[in-house]
Image (cartoon, rainbow, N blue to C red; front, side, top):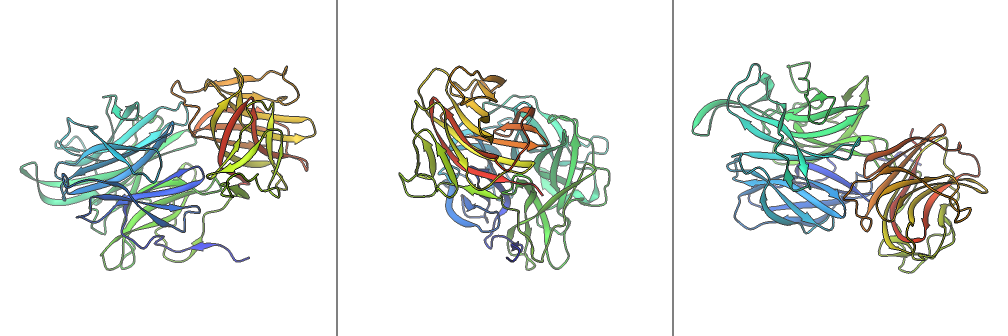
Length: 502
């Protein structure tokens, strides 16, 4: 079989400031369109390389001239789109938020301005800390006073999000421009004065090995000097250490005559849940359109790097060993060549697999013929449909062979993730609560469970938050399997995949 490849750009339509959201094992891309079109489009993909338009995720009337730099966060069944709206050259741009029940929209603007006391705010980036589940918003604002090495211009700040639609008012500095390559425009007319104006913008935060890397773009977005650098901190609120060099962007730079002004990068995990990619825009050689591009993100000795911007065919983002979106006919049982069910009533409907019997104690659907190795990643997106007893469970299970089962499941009351090495042997077996979940946890909406098993230990993430680690589990063997689990509950499952990291 020939190796899967892709070649930049990965979409042939104009899409500046691209952001990619992964939800239930599928990808949605949003971005900025040319002046004159008050919409935010959305694209869809299942492999990060083949993209198809789904239409407009958000459309507004002519109260504004442009909409810029959308990013979308998912929380408890609601999708929140953060973006700015204002004049064609940035006049009056302020941060706004719109909501939708589906990643493709349609999104409805809330009518609220997130930063009413600032005359100019753009490039909002919502970030959830995987340590404690706290949400933050990174965004850009203007600074009119030089401060030491920091220059007049646009910089990046961070604040806590309160309930996804309000800032806590605890704003802190992330990074301001301080290098010559970050010049936006000399003798710029702005705020009734003339300035040598510098810019850093387009924040995106990635936690790696306990540190927080804020990627940003610097310079003038229309010019060859535009590129991507980063600063680092030990806490999402900083302080962030200035970059070590000042001669140019460290992560992505222009390739003269081929790719101009690569920038406004976001980071997304490949379908294998292990590899990472930068998704960014750059001008075509004729400088007529900003096109969406993608390149691998690598890490070495605590430093990010990338081969991008690439022009030749590249290995495509790795796929998992197995995945299922349950697209079969409504009412059908799961594919018997892929799944082995025991107990309960398992049916596919509208792109979900639903275990309908609230009385089943337990019900399992195990992968058939795809045994996990010593190290593996198993993802299942789950939501509660109904409960048949006071403390039901729904989630995933690790089958270690006859009579030995590990359950990693959510309590139906939304209180905790439960760990049970003996569940399924009888109703008198007890489960052990490991971690209290967020107070706002809504059981009836989709949540992402990701289990990483390595050398007899398991780590569990719920919606990207690490809720358990170093759980002892038997090593994988020829009789091992992984799968889906309910106990006294009806639940729906989607976007299930199993991957063996390289």
